[in-house]
Length: 193
Image 1 (cartoon, rainbow, N blue to C red):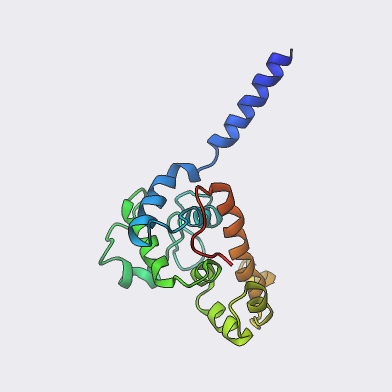
Image 2 (image 1 turned 90 degrees about the horizontal axis):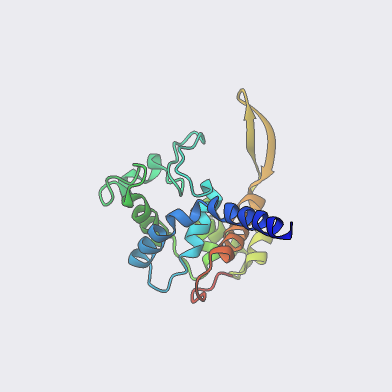
C-alpha cells in the first residue's frame, strides 16, 4: 500500500512540473536575453515576466491595445521600433518574439531591475517617483507615488472595480522577483532592489 501511495505522490509531483509552461520557453528566453542584454543578465526574471503576463502562453490580449505573445508586446505602440528589426515578432512561436522582447527591455534597462520591470509594466512613472523620493529604493519610490485609481474590471463599458495605479505597478516588480526565484539558475549580478 505504501508503494502505491508513493507512486501516486510522485505522479502528482511530476504532473505539477509538466504544467509549468515557462520551462518550454526557457531556452528561447535565455538565448535572447544573453544575446541582446548580457551573458550575465539574470534571464530568469524575463521568464518570470512571461509567467506574470501570460503564464508563459501565447496570448492575444483583450486589453484594447492588441497586446500579443508571451510578453504581451503591443504592436500599436512598438511596431515602429520592433518591426524593422524583428518582422515576425507577432507570429506565434517565432524567435523574433523573444528577440523583440529582449531588445525592447534593453531600452528600458536601469541600474536596478525593479525599475526596469516597472518601466516595462507602467512606463516611466517609476523614474519620476524615485526622483521625487530622492532615492532609487523601491519602498521610498512607492511612497512618492501619487497616481490615482484605474479601472481594472469593466462590464458592458461600466467600471466595476478600481485599483490604485501605484499598487498595481509596485506589486508588478514584487511578483517578477518572486517568480524569478523559482527559475533562478545563477547569481544576480544585476541588483534587483
